[in-house]
Length: 363
Ligand code: G6P
Image (tube, rainbow, N blue to C red; front, side):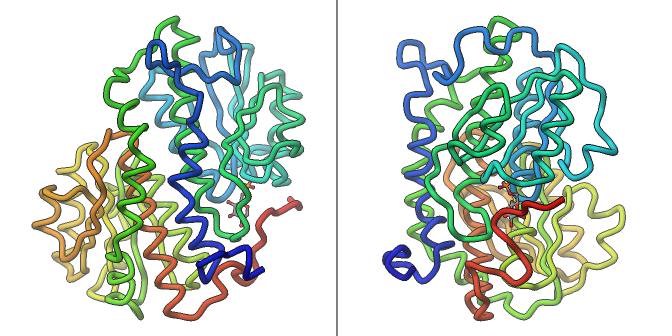
């Protein structure tokens, strides 16, 4: 097992560091070199003709990627909703001929997700699986499959597969919108070059040790809060999930604007607040973070250098400048590192947290 970890103490850290390669593999050959457009070679032209409505179903970290994907689809002009697969049997919205149901699952074996996928198929929806595992049950059962090509993930807490799922869903959103409307709706001039430089930006980010410093500084706090808006919201949820999974400390993620509608009652000088800035109404997020700061909470801004939040926050974790559609994913990597280092300080069994399994095959 030690051999498989290479120079790293844990698979999780190795997999965090594999993200530049995983992303480069994910996007390779999937952008049309002739026109710079997203041409997911996995699907023949017109595969998504007539798709008006998308439901994304998933659990755990994959649900956060699904939420990210649903927002990317909405921004591309397609109606989309992310749904917890384990709630689907009791809350599924109606499907019709124009509905595409996308199961997002690293393993392709999660029982809750398979059950929701089968329900959607029985209801007559077209289905697609976004997965890491070739030959998995979800890949075999869905009409179409998009492989994220992240390579094997051993750590129970998903890291590189979240990033690859979110990037592939962002590309897929553009492709679905293009097929459905006959024309890519978004201005891809910024997204595509920024996507191409994301692996090298991640290399730079991974070479810094700011996250380890933050983990040490706030060690022993009562609770850890994560806030974000727009695409920063799934990142806040994922930041908190990762933190609780591997540190066993209490952590919660909130939509920034929701803090004042209840969670603010929990905020004290002993509850650090990580605020994720993705370029979507950042001024509002900063105001929400300041509301926590006024109650004594230390605020750690996750944002590009030169951002106004750097002056206001107590600390910051830097992310490289990029398109708004990708900023949250860079922020997420900083948060993965904070969780990893916090768990390491507590000497937790990082790759195999208590009570958790890599793939849950019971409902
Ligand atoms: C388990 C794992 C999580 C994972 C979830 C969904 O709960 O511990 O890390 O996000 O299953 O797994 P999937 O393979 O469907 O993405």
